[in-house]
Image 1 (cartoon, rainbow, N blue to C red):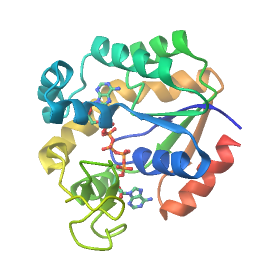
Image 2: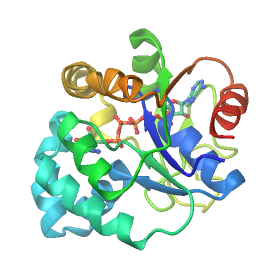
Image 3: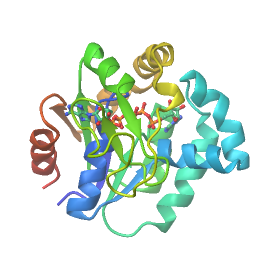
Image 4: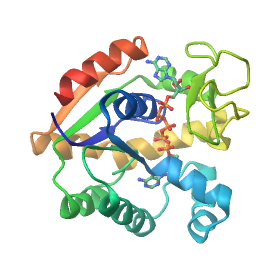
Length: 208
Ligand code: AP5
């Protein structure tokens, strides 16, 4: 089984959803820079204070902050690991290569129209980071997390205007990583459309 896996894909392509399943069903540790940054913002840490303005506008948090954060986390992890939302720039990918050897990059491919519909309908749990979709993956009780019972919220960057900027930022900065990992012979592209379980079956096949 592959043990060092990068999840690539535009905002809303399902990285968090599939990464969470890889964690809960196959035992990988999921390292999500987005979740770590949102927690830092909630806790008002120095990192959170610096990151907030970039996140609110849909831009990227500066490489040096992210690379420092991930180096610390990587040193603590044992066993299989899933990188969700990292790397997002070639500079971050080069920094990751210096820390560990990536076995596989899974690129979740989804059209923009579907991404916008998913993000604007997403509701997230501030406590356990579970994500829901109002139509395709609703919580059992409206507004309440199935897993931990916390009140769900809509991320500020999931509002329509910010979503468009996040898609542009993805195209300009992160899309080149598809060629980066393809050139290393480590890329698998999976169509990220269909049921969550159908996609997970393909993800599981790729990691085995
Ligand atoms: P981050 O939290 O990483 O956001 P993102 O990459 O934009 O990804 P998302 O969390 O929006 O989407 P996802 O692909 O995980 O999709 P999900 O599974 O939730 O980053 C946020 C911000 O932090 C960035 O904008 C940036 O500012 C900063 N940041 C983070 N990392 C950084 C880095 N490395 N460098 C610099 N800055 C960084 O699914 C989306 C929705 O679709 C959900 O509602 C879900 O239920 C639904 N869904 C999932 N799969 C399906 C399906 N198959 N069919 C229908 N609906 C589905």
